[in-house]
Length: 70
Length: 311
Image (cartoon, rainbow over all chains, first blue to last red; front, side, top):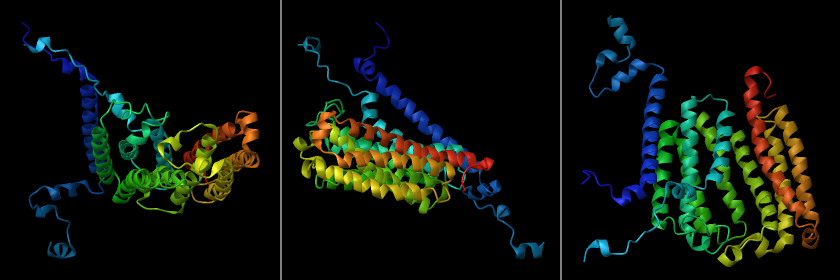
């Protein structure tokens, strides 16, 4: 007896399932591509790190008061 | 009794192609072309990948509104020969599936467009879907013989959305591109309605040819064509126009105006005598008309980097 018996519905829905796979892979590619494009086009990419879920004061832009202190 | 003795019930399983047909692919091709032109002629450059995603979202949004339209109109689609083979009336797709696909794709298209481009473009897309599915399909299609004019507005939004993707705004140029498709739709569609035997009457959809007669339809074609000319020529003197567009528009408007005038000045007896040759010819001109107007705008934008496009 075969270890894997394919149900008839699998054959019937193969086209739909493959179509859904292509759509989902396409969606992943689009979201990934958008992320890459958006991040690479930021005016100052180091500012991305400021939103890293923890406070990173060393990445805050310098103010005139900071410059005077230095 | 085992299940082996049961007769095998083979229900039709909807295929990917059936779901795709819900999205009205032929309408989508016009949407993709005009949205792409709206995006490319805008004065702000868009990253090619963002442009691709934006046009995809606009196409999917338009397709989703087509699915919602098919869900709502399934009762009349089954009565008309032209639409009886659509996925729902033909029994290949359940109405609930079409509704789910329409709503899901609408949501995905609008949200993704907002993330990829901006909120204005996404808002315009959401409004287009609402306008086509609710204002046109549910409200006015079965209520007024001017339904085709209102439906045309939904088809006119894509270049405006494409422009909004690039610039983040609405301007005279994008309004004129919208108006070009809006004013083009009635003469285009009514020229077709004159020579194609429709069964809208059986389905209770008031079409101008049936509610007000063919003479009035011929008058309407002429009236809308006269309104279309200044819109088409006006674009030539905006920032997206130029000599190539102006020459193209002059030739096309003279050609289409002549066709509409020929339709206007004759009656059904004359049309029957030559098997609606003039109406068929003018309908064909209308297809070239829209395609070449947007093609000329694209040519102006493409030649601009070499100092050849624009004024």
